[in-house]
Each structure stands twice: as structure tokens, then as C-alpha cells.
Image 1: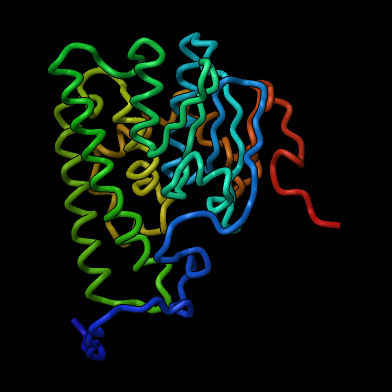
Image 2: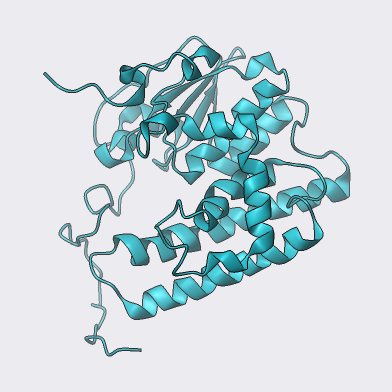
Length: 294
């Protein structure tokens, strides 16, 4: 490992707004809103406020899968939250998610609106709301599914905020940090590969919310969609993860869910907001990208 300048932490840490990095302008050590901004409300009971990051894709895939099963009550409006512009710090969004992270869901189907935040909580909530769809009821199978779901919630921060940040976004490359998190991500991929060598899906023989949660992160990584790090991490070694990734990617609901609230990548893969199933077929430029200011 190359030598690095010695850093001695101060006795008391203070916030340096000039810390650099791609997300420096929206990172801060305090919570709460920075602006008064109400959230829009559409025509459906389920109102999703999100962006097509891996965490956002989890929920739009789930909603599209529910609709594909015939659950008409899963119709939803998906509103774009531009985290680069700080939309997550608007007062309306903070009321739905005090943690100011996407995705956030409001269920207005009952007499009193219900807020749900954190992607795993939303997946479980929707599964239970619609008759345990994609969530087994048999105790052992349910425990396996939820265990892998929680594995993902504990592991993905090492991939995103750890490896992804230091490899792709940090203002300077730190060998120790990249090595540390690359090693952990490789270990996680090995965990997945070993599991998928013995099981078609993470929870067993059936596709579940554990797969929906994990696929956008680790499927995206092995297909070169995250951080352009596939070659660096030698992802071709993980044959079972690749098999599982390709299998899920062919599901029509997954293809639709991945497009919702997407404002980057090829235009053919984007749907800025989703308010009706027909939006996938009737996409116009205003639905693909933000309107230009006059």
C-alpha cells in the first residue's frame, strides 16, 4: 500500500462544507427540511416519491410485479425526487420520511394516510397489504426470505456508501479505503454466488421481495451498471449471480419498474414519472426529462 499523508483527527469534529466530492452539496450533519415544499398527490391511493437509484428501483419493481399479478389496488403515482437538487429536504418529503432518503410511500387507501419509509419496510408493507404477495407464509420459507432481505439492507451500504463512494465519487483516491471496501464487496458477491449455486432464488425456489431488493444493487454491479467497476472487481467470476441477474432482468415487470423515475442513461430506458400503466407506451419528451426553463 502506498504511503499517505498522516491525518490526525481533531479532538472535536466540525462540518467543513468544502469537503468536496460529488454529493458534497447535499450532505450535511443535520436533519430536517431546508425548504417549504409540498408534495404532489395523484389520483391513485399509493403515492411514491422516489428516484431510480437501486433503492428506488426495489419499490417500483414490486409495484409493477403486484400489478402483473392482477392486484389493481397497487396502481400508483410515482413522483420524481431529484436528490441532486435537494428535493428530499423539502418539508413535504421530510414529513413522509424524516430521514430524507428515497424511496418514500404514502398509502391513502384508508381513512387515515399511512406513511412508509425505508425500502425494505415498503416492500414488506406492500407484500402484506396484498395477501403476502412475494413473501412466503410458511415459517421457514418466510424466515429465509426475510433473512436475505435484511442481509441486503446491511450489506448494500458497504457497496454504495463504502466501495462506490471511494471508488467513483470521492474527491481523491484513497488506496486503503478502496481496498477495504473492494474486499468486502467481493466477499458479499461470494456469499450470493454460493447461495445461488444451491437455490434458484435467494429465498429458495420462488422469486420474492428478497430478490427484488438485492437485484438492483448486485445485479447492477455484475452487469456493469454500477460505478463501472465490473472489470475492477472481476465480476465474471460469479456465474451464479450472473445467471440469477439475467433471469430476473427478463421479467416484464422488472423491465418496467427499472424505468420509473429514471432520468439518466439511454432515453429508451427512462420514464420520469409514472401515473398510469399507459405511460410506458405513451412516453413523450416531458415524461422523459425535466422541462427546460425558458
